Image (cartoon, one colour):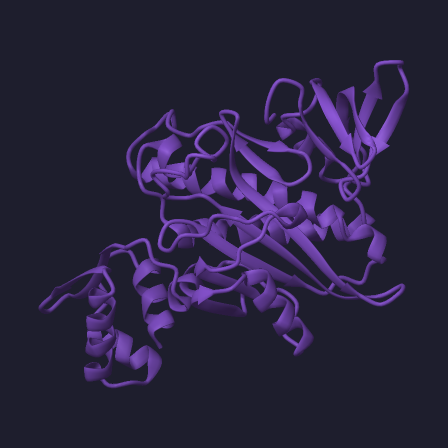
Length: 340
């Protein structure tokens, strides 16, 4: 009931009386009052005025299951929420849920991870109360060799969701020209970049038979309100708080990413490739029209990045003029003179 009352308070312009709430949900006014007190204890600023009722004034930066559910506007993405104060890894939690029959669109969210992982087995810094650690379960009816494209779909959706959330936040703060919103870019295939530093990463994993996908897990880690980083990450990592100059609420950001992913995923399914998303992704690609180092198991070589193919590969031109496609699972790409 807390989710429903929280959603009603958010969607109502003005006050909602205790009688209206109790009548709508078929509970006593005492039960309503207890929920309001719980919300206040959790940090929500809920104003109670005699003969008027209740009005939500402000919300804290919390990512409880009730908070997330009250904000979701999707049809399926993030509608079934698994929330953890602490999890080893949201990817592991969603994979287990998938094996146990959890539905398409199940979202695992943790306030803290004890064993967060990035691409190629790298650790992901996962302190409590400051960032987003989430993983989405998908059950697409596509061939296994097409699953890697979902990393790019999520990268695009994450950028668009962050921007959508920040625009809403800045407008609410009265910043008409949105001058505080930093430029967001994608470092192919799975990193979100601001001012040359990593803001977010994406890890896609798959459970499959020879020619059939059981389920796919798409994990997302976003540095939201971290104010400092370990010395080894200071030059390469950043957070929304550092770039925007203020705390960013995580739950609305999660909801915005889910909203954008649901739409982009359905565009992807129409052609089972990135045809309908390529232009938007390429416009955000920090590697585009830049020299890069392509690092393979047998060495590395310098090339010029041209963009992405409709099937998700990075198209590069070698120094001898040869044009080829680079597959994300086989190589890494970084800038000639640094991280990007």
